[in-house]
Length: 399
Image (cartoon, rainbow, N blue to C red; front, top):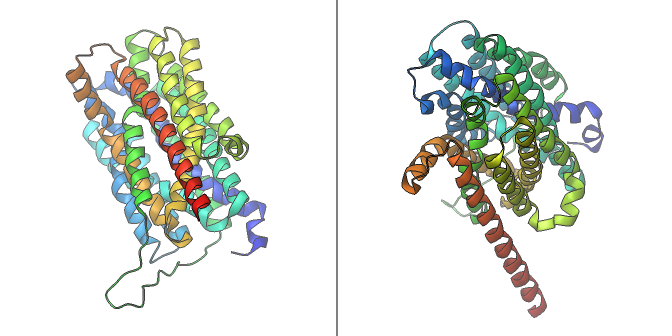
């Protein structure tokens, strides 16, 4: 892609517009409590499937999307994903019971899973160096801003009728128009094979899979914020669907702000960016555990957003860089997104098991587990990064 196209404002707008689609799932999250009321016989874990099924589908379709880039352009993969998101999102606003909604979430999840790695892959393909880092941070900020809009819209619509929250998927249409008309089609990236007969070129490194596993573990605990918030606020009589959307909006505002600032903060945090991000998310759960008012919930959500806005771009850049060659960045990101999806889907079930094993009965037990895991994990990762950095320095001195 030429420098002229990379510098074009519309190319940047179209590239960042892909990130908007990553947060379309936020529209239905504030409605979970209202949906639970509409289906009182359904178990809480069944209601949470509406949030976790897209994460499960993300596991498979992020990998499929990465493979598809070997046969078609990233833009065409994004186009297919947009169609699936729209088709899987709208019908539940008008027809169907809980089982039908779960089925449509499978379709939506396929598109959601495909769009997630492509949002980062398109930036990695079109922008490099400091500009690439800046765009990756802005991508997180833009996605967070979209999350604010989608969450508020979903919460407000759910306040009238939970089915109305699905109407928000109509926003996919103008977003798709910008992407379709303004995003460059760079064609198919050719993946050559090594000349040695029978041996394929290595695409990913061990670090790719280590980061994918780490992100799966992080998402097991941090995703409990999204899935539990509306139900906890309803159970503790702190607020309704619209107010839970407000808290989620504060979270995304924090993520938005620090996504924009990531290009600057990363200069100071350097290789510790992801560790500090995870630490802030862990600290946010301590506040959320003690929160007995909307104000405290919003403070916790803001700190969560700061951590997430730092952690997400740092890990995405590290994953893209872990590929053997830049042309395999999309595949590396797909593997990382698959790990993220696994963590999110199994989050309610693993946390339920841990609650039982630890004999925790509080409505916020999941958040207690999250706080301990994230704070401990972030400290361990900081020590590991420090030791690894020291090792690299010693190797260079010896050489």
